[in-house]
Structure formats: structure tokens, C-alpha cells
Image (cartoon, rainbow, N blue to C red; front, side):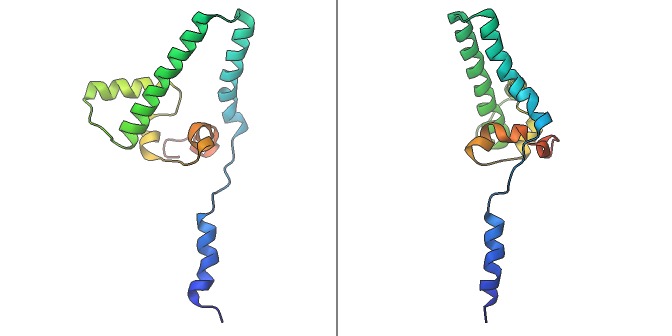
Length: 130
């Protein structure tokens, strides 16, 4: 006869398995559309060093605001900031189209793909509370 601990073990192991995450096709269209538009813009307007430098500068600015603002400040409160700095971090990160400040402060996800793009495309994350 199996002990109560052995009977509970399969249920406990089922709880720690990663859940299958569905990506919403309609919600992901803007995400993929922006990337296709960037490629289309290079094909249509042509490639230039100025365009590359501008794209890289905007990329690093957005990543700074998402990392320093949303992730480090609003999610983890890793440092102290004045109200004007908080406002600048929030506006800069919001301009990155990475959901809002309340969403980031409330939710944490794991995994490389999920952390970078999956959460943005999942229909269950359309609301503020996820």
C-alpha cells in the first residue's frame, strides 16, 4: 500500500511542470508587423549608416528604459528615484510598447522567449492584471 506522501508526489510534480503558453494570433500581428515594416523600410528606402545608427540608438534607449525603469525600478525597486525620474522612466518605457507600468510592477515571468516576447503576444496578458 502506498503512503500518503507517495500518492501526493505525482500531483506535486504535475504542479511544477511549465504550463503550455498560447500566443494570440490577432494580438501578435502588431508585434510582427513592426518587424516586417522595418525590413520593408530598408528595402523601400535603402540602407544607410545614418539609418543603422538611428535604429541602434533608439533600440538602446528603449532597452535602457525597459530594463532600468520597468524591470529594475518598478518591478524590483532596486534603487531610489525622485518623482521626476520615476516619471521619465515610466514614459520612456511606455514608449517602447512593452505594456504599462502597472503590468510590469505586478507580474513576473520566466524563460528566455517568454521574458523577451512571449508575454507580449499571449492573449491572457491583455489586461493590466494579466
